[in-house]
Image (tube, rainbow over all chains, first blue to last red):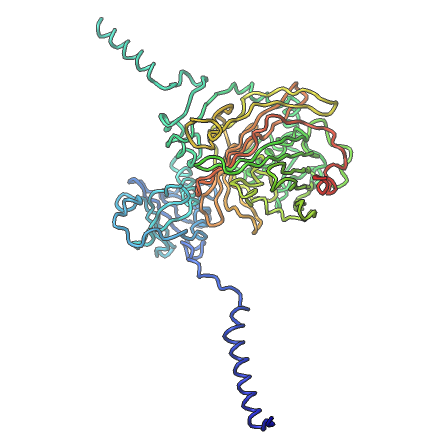
Length: 177
Length: 427
């Protein structure tokens, strides 16, 4: 057996270092990482909740309006909205994420209750800048959610049924009643 | 003359053809797919959908309000009235507070808040407390019941189980002498059938404090060990069925676990085994038995119509005024998001609850049925006897309860609700 020269030893050590580095960088390290969560779909409302200053729900030729004044929400004629109905709706919009995209490019939006005649929820900030516009369609067959389109985009989303609950609360809290 | 004869004939014919048309507001009538529009305002939305499709129908039985009020004992109502002004709520936890001491009261009997102001920001929590203390009036007892998993093809799983409980708070006849652990109540439950779950049991202890968690132990015979379980597991499905531990009594958690908000009031159909109380028979100085009829479901009745999980017999629906209350758990491990509950304004039972998941998706409705027990004006009890949990996302359901025999027990052996009992259940 021939004894290794210093140069050969250095070469072998180099090869070993490369192998160890390969094992560490390529094979082992990825397994030690925390699983990376898929990027979550952003919430419907991405602006700070206290920046919301106006909400309009338009349906069947009727418009429900909520305007933020200094310390409360009023309708278009200055009548106050009850309690925290508006805060609940804004909070829901600020936390609700689409459950799924149901149809990227619907041929017949009316099949989802969308298109002309659909309800429309518009949220704006004090500057008048739009924060969100939702076109609201039918509930899905299982009633777990509601079909909607966002900001004039074509794709049909499924939103959680909690939104229909908050909208029902809004309708029944109409200061005009 | 011919015209009047014809008119009379038409009216008579119409009366004959009208399917159980309502004769008067106080007469029983049937709400079904033929007149589903009449159910739109007296049932939760997801339920109306089943009604419209002919999967559900409702035998509506109006009641005499004064007689219905007397389903609870005079002792209970007198105590409720006397509670006016005595109690408040802890700001931070929504725990019940004695105004006189600023602390949790030693003992409460009757509804702690006889008057609810709907503009009170704490109204939701006060309603929840009225519910909790009303349900506690019986003091303790037990029943053997079934859990049935049902889908469109019929029953796919059946579990027979029992539950025994003892209440320290809210009971008629005052507090028990010994309560060394300062409990509000405790319970033990176990599976009896089928073999694969036989002996699986749980012990729960609920402490009478504002911020303490329930202590829960689960025992599995194969490991012969009782292990502590997180209280948030009450939002997990029971044995893989579409029913949750928190469905017992429609809400089984501590009042302090939820944030409560009163959001409305309306009339709703209340599911009851019968509108007025059952009688009980004494089998010992401390134990009374109550026999109740079985509520047959569609899957058990050949040729039945409607959803296989819909109750076909021995269930009536009474129109009742309710508070609509939102509840949301503060526990990050709790599976439910916003839960909407319908509480009777007078009898303080929850008849329906709609559950959203944490993503805001509605997925589940629980219909909660009850029966009342009363012999005289000194004692009464209200039993949760039915939960029909329907997962509208998966179109499956589970039925819990439907026991035919139950009992009230005023004097359990002091050592019964213990880990020793739990671990020796299958000996």
